Image 1 (cartoon, rainbow over the protein chains, first blue to last red):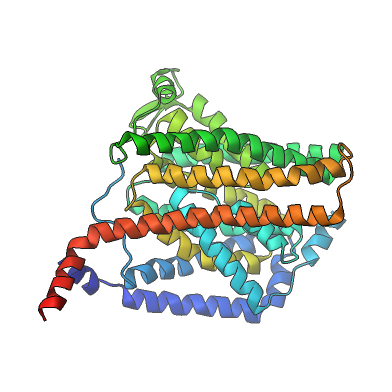
Image 2 (cartoon, rainbow over the protein chains, first blue to last red; image 1 turned 90 degrees about the horizontal axis):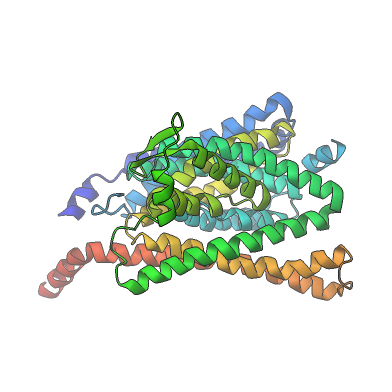
Length: 83
Length: 364
């Protein structure tokens, strides 16, 4: 029963969307790595860039990895709660 | 400043093997962090250095991967009702102050005693803290397991009950993880100590989580989840500081993050299946194994400082590599316990379904 419900709610489209975006981000970083490490490594006011990139990657890739585990059927226990 | 500029210019070339290596190490580190709230950093920094990344760049890049990882992990565990945001932010801010103070002490030690002296100080702190705190946590976990009450709600320690009973007007704050009001005059020094440890050995959680459990009275689940908020607050400030000097190699940080976000989600899911004392088991086991890793390095630093006879080059290499391998083993053992616990809990919860399916297959 529980399995039927969870299989219907599997976030396939979310996984595909954020998976695609995540791959695009990593490919872009790989292709433009020389320019990126040059600009991001300048220090000073450019310090915002690596921090902003970390937030962007964490949102996109974090959304993907979360939905990835759901899609393959690994989800939190329904029984337990903290405290 | 020239040194820093030279280090920053020394960003390594990445090949497929390097990327794969960082991804896997990131995954394992993330898995453990998602479960116990910290850990992994003590392996990730030397793992990057083993690829030829300069020390400061490795520390900076590790920190820049740590805060987004902690952010994702804390959001995930907040969904399970395990995070005390208020406690995390208060401890996190005081930890940030501890990081700055701890970094200052590190610089003074390095200026007075050189790199070997600084390394000896770090190793000594590692060994003392891990032996005392890690030993205590492991003993507590074993006692719980042997008592046969592993499923029972965790008891608040006597120290925590005393801390919760102290009323200092004007400083009392209610924390949901403790279900009690405690004075921030207790939380601030504990946060500060967490930050100092983070600045010294890169893993503040080895003080942060036990102090939330044994001194403040939080459950293992709440403490380990709230530590992720602390790590996020500390990590943002620290990363920005390093980025100001151009020391963050964003490629290394994001590749580690690629693996660690898979790991931290899985580790967080794992906490919903396991008995609470398993968090103490994983943390205690990792801490105790790491003691041996750091202890092996002590003779090298003593020799470099001229406090004992000079060691043979081969012996130095063997000790250094063995130390790194033992650290890797500590992380792998922790990851193994997490996955095993998750698998057992998952099977136990889904067992009736599995049984029904097997019966259906037999019938058809």
